[in-house]
Image (tube, rainbow, N blue to C red; front, side, top):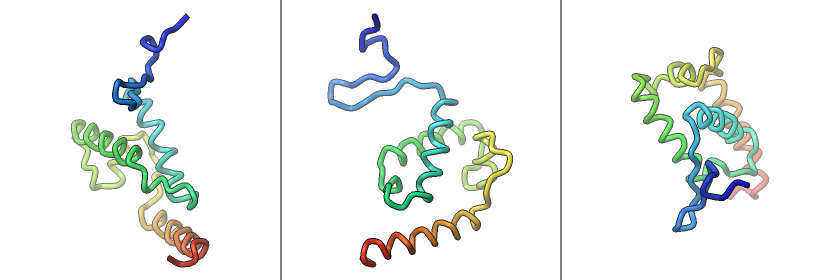
Length: 108
């Protein structure tokens, strides 16, 4: 029988969760989470510290690998995405979702 000490995801003494995962797994988790950021307006993932912290960590690792993270194609290639959607195309879709979201909230 496994104990909590044997599990790769554990609760720390201060009540936080620590996940001991491989970089590849973190990259695989990040991409769909980031994809949801702009496709489901009600989720508010863009306000999540967890996603921001994961992104910051992955950017740090990419820089260690010599990736210019300001160059979108290079950042996407680091994730092994050979056919990235251009920022302009993603941003147009996001703007449309944002307009719908503002309308749902009464425009505040």
